[in-house]
Length: 156
Length: 60
Image 1 (tube, chains in turn brown, blue):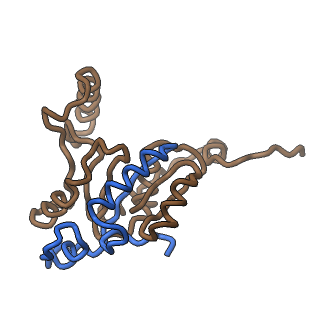
Image 2 (cartoon, chains in turn cyan, blue; image 1 turned 180 degrees about the vertical axis):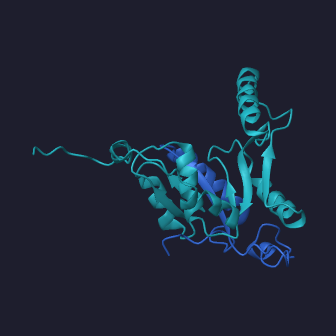
Image 3 (tube, helix red, strand yellow; image 1 turned 180 degrees about the horizontal axis):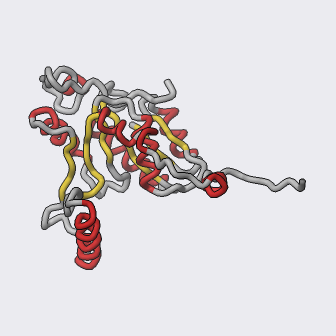
C-alpha cells in the first residue's frame, strides 16, 4: 500500500513499522490531492495501481472486481462510475457535471461524467503521470517558494 | 485460482496475459490519521496483513 501523505505523520510511520508493505511519500507541505496522487503514482511499483480515497467513500471490496475486469477486458484502466443510488448531494453533483461539461467542451469530451478518482490502471499507464508529463514553463522564483520547507532570509 | 478469493495466490497467475504479482494502492491523505487507520483496517480485512499481494515499499 502506498500512502501519499502531505504532512509528517507519526500515524503513517507507525502503520509502516507494523506492515512493511506500506510505503509513505511524505511531502513537505500540503500540495493538494492532485500532486499527492502524482507522487504516489511516481513511486508505485505494482503491476497495477489502485487509486482510492482513504475515507472509504469508495468501497475497497470492489478492488478484486476491478482487477478481474481489468484482466478479462481489453482495458488499461477500470474506473468507478457513480450509480444513481450512490449519489452525492444534488447541488454538488450538478456543479460537478456543469464543470465537466465545460472542461469536456474545451477538451473534446475526455472526462467521463459521474466518475471519481477510484480506479485501477496498469503501472506503465500510471507512469504517464511521471516526470515526462511535468509542466515545462517555470517561474523559478515562484517555484522556489512553492516547494515549501522552511526558508530563512540572509542579508547581502 | 486459489480458493482464497483475496489471497496473494488469487492474483498471481490469475491471468496469463495480465498477471498481477503486486498491487499498489495509492491513497492521498492529509491530516487524516483516524481515517487512514480505518482504511488500513479495511484493506487488511480484504487482503490480509503482509499477504504478499500488496506492493512492496518503494524504500525497500
